Amino acid sequence: MTSNDSEVGTAVAMPAQREVDEAEIAQQVDKIVAGIRAKDLETLKQVYATDVVSFDVEPPLQHVGIAAKLENWAKVFMFFQDVTYEVRDLTLTVGDDVAFGHGFGRLSGTLKNGPATSGMWVRVTFGFRKLDGNWLITHDQASVPFDISTGKGVADLEP
Image (cartoon, rainbow, N blue to C red; front, side, top):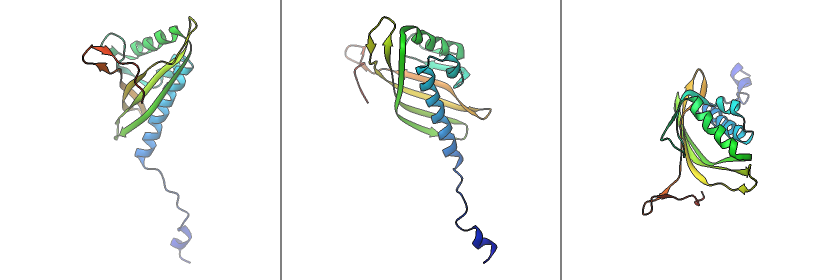
């Protein structure tokens, strides 16, 4: 038996870097879900770049910086006793140091004044950059489709 014969079948395939990066980005999205459900701003702070730009569903047109993004989440948490967040149909496209993902998100739960709400589905887009070895959100957007004839948002659509 040659030295090569002893190595056959014992090699373990290492995942490609792209697969590793995709898994790390998916973990960041999972961290967003967990942070929202726990109403934990410190967990959420770990997934956003300090200069994140957010196009959220509420005014103004853009929120710039980590403080503004966390302030948005703090406002959400003020309305909910218990909050649930889910992401569906997340699709990721990953490059060496930038990536983006899109899917659907829904915020629901029990409001502080008592009633439960099933929330509404919104379209979500995440832009990521690999900064100091970590995938962080540098841009996110949540949007609601609108009826062009009335100019009003359509909030009853489902993925």
